[in-house]
Image (cartoon, rainbow, N blue to C red; front, side, top):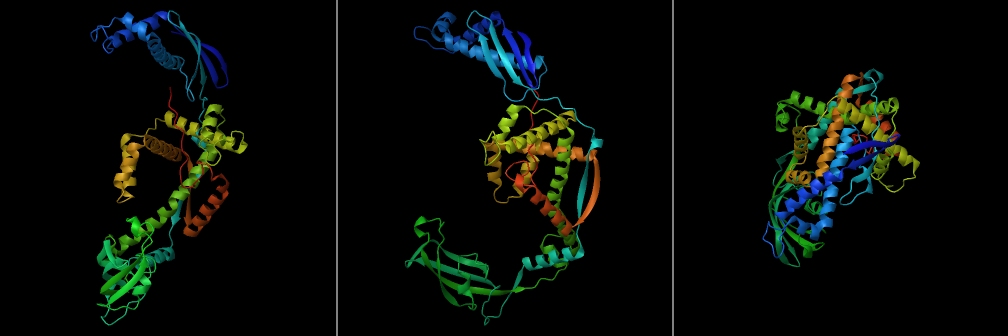
Length: 452
């Protein structure tokens, strides 16, 4: 195989490749011998069909198959031989081919730009942390004591009221007929939350323990049995018990009910929770500072074919190739992806299979009851796993860069953090249609382009 650089202009290179006819004949003969054991023709025993007979009947198809394989192999070898880093799929232009002839074709390539990485001393960013004041912490703890209610039995002669917990049995009928799923025992509701059926709670205000009460309500539109959807139902309710809310005391016992060791441990957990609530958004602000400097301090030519492909992924305007704003946005995304990827490759940053599995496990734990759905989603969607890998890869690169640059630590109060995050989101609202800053707490998708 002979490979020559036919032309080179900017990021576009054309290679001229010639594969000797003798090499093609050798591969063609080898393929005919393979097929001899597979083809079953009338008048011949299986495996005994002469190669010439196979060639006469299937020659064009077999030649096309062999040429296709030769094109792929020679393309890959030529790119490796010339040590090229390509952007996107090569374009093949056949010049001469045919049985008994050399295969002559041109390979039109879009190349990735050479990136001269800048020294880390050029970059600086802010590293934010949250200072949780006592009043904020006390307010959150107070809300927790109200949220995690406990109840105590009311006197038998006391009527139920809003906020009480009601335990009851019921038998429901539609058109005077009982139906499957229309019976319940030991049902617990909190009056006023209206979580059972719309308007159901109000009709149980003012009842007493051991009383019976008839409640009329409309079954939901999404009822499992379609014939019962939106039907008027009558519930014969028997009140088993009524409990009134009991004010929780913020102490060690209450903390233990919530899974903490004691009140001090609960306080620290809540403090961390408040900090974490803002840390993700603040990290995005730090990341934006870094990305802006990376873009500003690196001058590279971005392959046009990558820009065109990226524009197709920009929401709301997938076909506006002449939209200058979209072009600049696509160019920025590709440029940053190339720069980050170069930092990743230069510093041997990789994402292991174990890291991907660990991240999936985190998602599983955050979605109790839907574990199977999460696992199946990644099993059935390889692109989702690839996206997750790209996200983790980018996060590792950003983390590495943060460890190398000058970081100015800034401690913010909750109010200061809220103001900064709000301002940050407002400033970037105009870019919300892109995946770069569609959601400020979501990391930029790195374009992981492997070396060919």
